[in-house]
Length: 198
Length: 105
Image (cartoon, rainbow over all chains, first blue to last red; front, side):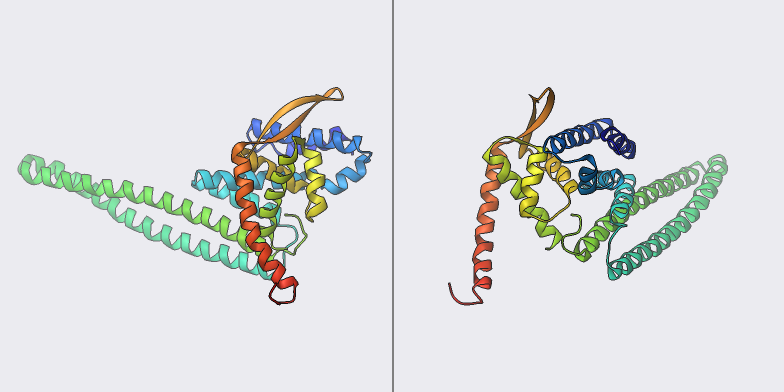
């Protein structure tokens, strides 16, 4: 593989990153290879010590995503960090760590699903209540305006709660996913053998 | 070595290397790897983080017909290095004690 091929491939693997981040990494590794070559290292040896472009890219992306999720915790950032971290560390980990990770993911899935299920059920109930009350309030408006207004108010309150529930659900899910990616990263860090890629 | 410990040491090593004189990515990597056993690709994220923390700044300078990015330590970086050295002093006492076979130094 030539220097150009190596850098091209690295750039391709970094397309997920913002342009500035990618340019930064490419500039760094271009200079790096130039300097190594000037020190008399053949390209083969440089690639061997540096690692394959996909491994180098995986490390850059993992670092970027985790930092971004820490800075701005959101569901998408958390998920991105989780995937990036898993893809770097997919390589050499001890069996107990793998088991721990599977258990963590499994537990997370159960937690998310049960929370989601209960929230969806609550939302469904509220939704029906809102629809019924809205209908009733319109009818009541003509016969007993006071009672009609009260029912309309109640249905407004219920729809407010509905929106709040949806918001809580999204927040909760993002916290859970971000938390899991940090948890998995720390499990892997602790279990990795000394000397293997930092 | 513990990964977290190694990461911390690596950052401090890089600060110490750049504190001597402004230098470039390849040189920093080689100097660090003489001390710590890690992969070469581990240095880029460390440098980027130190830059984001404003401990290091970069500038480009022409070298042999091309541009080379030099890293330079900031005042904040020097302050951080002093703090890290204080922390390591504490470690050193413990390490000396362990290495002396648990005898009072």
